[in-house]
Amino acid sequence: MTQDAIDFLVNQHHQVEALIEKVKAAGPDSRTELFDQLREMLAVHETAEELILRPVTRGIGEDGSRIADARMAEENEAKKVLAELDKADASSEGFLAQFAAFATDVLKHASNEEEVEFPLVREQTDAEQRQMLASRMEKVEKMAPTHPHPSAKTTAANAVLGPFAAVLDRVRDAVSAAIKD
Image (cartoon, rainbow, N blue to C red; front, side):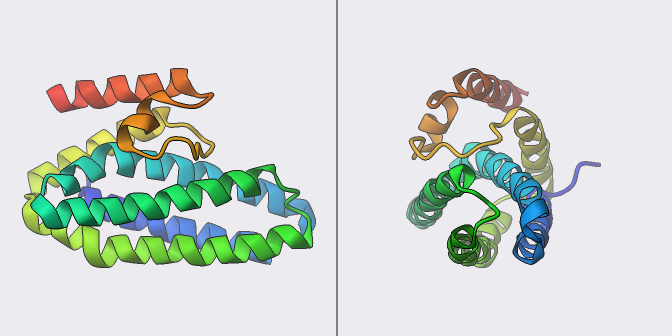
């Protein structure tokens, strides 16, 4: 049985939190590799949320649209900073200072999802729908970009913009096919 989409995302939030702590604690030699793991996980995770979860949230009326817009704004800001960090020298002290602020924002974003968005989605969907959403997220994550694309500020833009357009096109095709299933 496929797991519940909300449980799937919360589990990933825990993995992100653990990777953040590892990056903070790492020495200069291992920090780049750990940051790359975190960057990839965040890019993949946010793509699944933006392409699969956000449309569901938006479909829950005015409150859902407001919540989805707030989460997208947080994610768009995080993409910008993540792209800057991706270009920075992870072994530098400047990186650590910027990373610490970024980590705080990422954890606040996850908390906002867990406290506001996820309960709304859980309340408005049944177990079978959430299992189907988790299955779609797993498919999308297998084809998602592994770097942030700050120019992709909307769900639609995430599917068509950036240097990973070919990868994003496959994600969009997978989402469309999954929705038809």
